[in-house]
Image 1 (cartoon, one colour):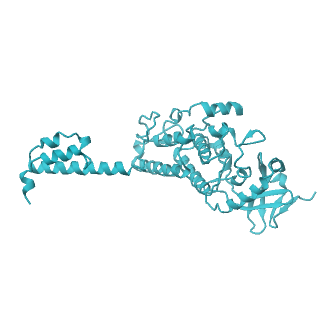
Image 2 (cartoon, one colour):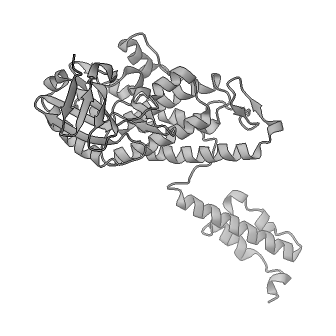
Length: 387
C-alpha cells in the first residue's frame, strides 16, 4: 500500500499522518510534517471543520491572528511559520520542538525546584508581555501549551488557536472557553477574557510547578467553578516550606479573586521575578556547602528561608516606591534637617531645649510652622557666630 502524503501550501507535507500524529485537542490535531523548502521538521495543526462551522467568523479571525502572530518574533513563543487555507482545510504550521510539553515534564519529574520555576515563569512572562502589548490574549494558558526547547527554554504555544474564537464571546456552544482548572473566577462568572485572566492562569501554573498539584480541584466543571470562585488559595508554605517568602507573596497577588486586586501586568510580574531571582542567586553565593541544608526533594534551604513566613499582605522583599515621590522628598528633607541639627549640637557642646521639644516625626518638613517658630526663638551659639 503506498504511503499517504498530505501536501499543502506548495512547500509543506505530512507523510503518513496516522503514524506522525503528535497530539489531539478540542480544536484540532497536531502532526509532525516537513518544510520541503528548508528541509526542517515542522508541527502542523489542522483545525477541525466543526470548530469553524460553529463559528462562521472564525476564518476571518484565523487570518487576522495569523498575521498578528507573524509579528510575535520572540524567543519564548513558538514561531508561526505559516497559516495556510486550502479549500475547506485550515493549517497552522509551527516550529517543531523536541522537548515535549511542561505537562509531560511535570508528570515525569513532579514539582520543580523553585529557582527553575522562577526561570520558567520569567520565560512565560516575557512571552505574555510581548503578546499583550500587541493586544493578543492567550486565553488557554496551561502546562500542555508550554513547550520545551532542546536547551531547556520554555515557549508558549497555541496563540493562534486561542484567538480563532471571537474575543467578545464568553462561551461557545454553552461552554466556557478554556480549561476549567486554569479559568479565572471572573470568567466563570460570565466576564470576558482580559490580560488578568492570562495572569490568573499563569499563577495557577506556577503553583502547580512549585507544589506538584493544582491549587483548585473538582471532579467536574461545576465543582471546579465552585472551588475557583469560593475556596481560598491554599497556603503554599504548608507543602513547600523552603520557598522564598517573596515568591509566595507574588503568587498570592496573581491568584487574587478580584481582578482589580490582582497584579496589574505580566511586565510587573517579570520585574518581581527578576528581583527574586537575584536574591536566590545571592543567597546561593553567600551560603557555604557546610552550612547548607537540603530538603527531601534535594532543594537547598538557606537560613533565611527557614524564617517564619506567615501569610500576610506585606511584601517580604524590596519594592519600588512607584508614585511615592512626594513622600520620598519629605523623608529626605527630614533626614537632612535632622543631620544638620545633630551637627550643630555637637559643635556647641550644649543641648538645645527648643530642638528637643519637637518630636522626631515633626522635624522633617521645612514648612512645619512649629519648627520655624522654635528655630526663630533659639539663640545662636558661639560656634555658629564663628565664620
